[in-house]
Image (tube, rainbow, N blue to C red):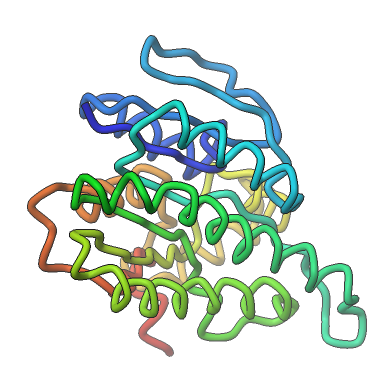
Length: 237
């Protein structure tokens, strides 16, 4: 049986990925600030502030000691929107801990078991915002760092049977991060959808399908890649 850690698995994109993995026969361990409002016989939910490195390190060690982790999906995220004049060191430090330090600690804990079994899949959920977006200094910088981690780890771990890839979603409606900035059903949401080349906003299920591709055992020749699940918004214009 494959066992996956999915961060942010209680809602939004993380929950969609967790559900897809459960449907695929995986055991899923969700790490998130809040407990999910849904259950599954193969779901274990742990409440954790992933921006706290000490707490993350402790939980990562406990999980890896008690489970054979085959997959790690880091989907938990936060935005901290602010124009340059208002970006604070706290914004940068918090998102660095959440987007870069947390997956590093989780991967380090899972690596010995992955190496021993010569199999592992690490998937980092980045963002189309890495290409530039107003008021996203801390968010875009740390999400771009996730792509750099994926490329670096892919080179380091390829000979161990471990692949590492990133997914960069575009505008995904139905998630708290999106609707904290764009109100659900608003004129701004409709205008944004009209500007997407495929003429719709994305869904968490769109991202989950991409994650399941990278997670597959026979996707072993695909590593170090970033897949934009964005409806064409990464193409410019």
